[in-house]
Image (cartoon, helix red, strand yellow):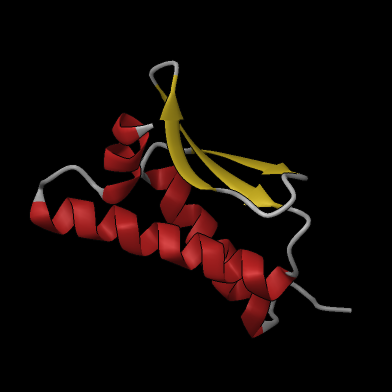
Length: 87
């Protein structure tokens, strides 16, 4: 069983810390193949899909971090907000 000092859990915890620091509420839900960053009702969310493996969820969280960091570096709307407007 993994422990808190396990490198894979460190990656997971580091990604969630960055996501939360950017103002997102983290929700872990059984979505069935979805998830990621979104905004609705004036609030920002990161949905982690519990139907995915831990490795897939880490990839999903690290992709969200890249989107957040890209938005912060360019000072433009990050892709999560752009996708929300398209829907």
